[in-house]
Figure 1: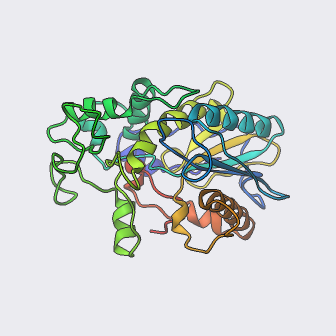
Figure 2: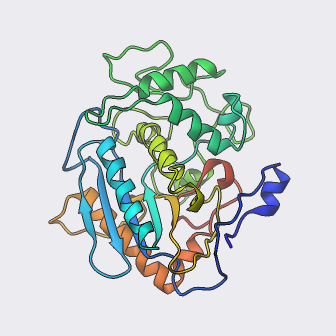
Length: 320
């Protein structure tokens, strides 16, 4: 069965999900296929550096990378990859490189009901519009509308020519809680604060424009993961780590999908200079998952998050 955070969820009034059918207690490896995705919030089709790269790695063989020019094409490609794996009874670990959650209190501040992470995912899936063939999207308008609903603005960053009443081009109109007990929303999630204390530099999920604007990747990416998670063919056998599942126990021959947030820059190992950096990073990450799955360290990583992760999410590979 899936290992769930039952005690914590019960305390918070959240009902645990029903375990995926047919799970068993022990196995040699958890997954048969590893898919790592380097995302992009580009507003036009793009390939090469700073675009979407997908690495597909089976339990045996070499990694295969693709570079779809738009998010719509990437979503179609990923759905086909997962469908094909599930049809073969494979267990899939898939990760995207953007935050899967926001600093705690965000869903409550928006008046959203239900588990915080799920309510935010559903909200973004409904409101973010993203053209499949052109990458044109309304992420800045969505962020501006959210800011307008909050006591203090949290999102910031936009093209100078794209003027919006509730979204500043610079970080001059936002306000965050000084500490995690303050009434205002924080700028950082717990996992990011932990990385900062260790000397790693991450960007804020509220930043939407400029170098490292991971906030735009989250706004355009979360709806994609939401649709994959809730696809009619996949919904019953898919879970999102660490919100819905801790360490999954997946029997061979029964298709299953586990989604997890990643940060490829967590591994500072030099990459093959003959490859594009984003391409090299997803290859390296997928290979590290496969190695960790075989050695048992991947299972340890899946238990490393703090209790804050049940609302804010966590980066796979960051040990608490």
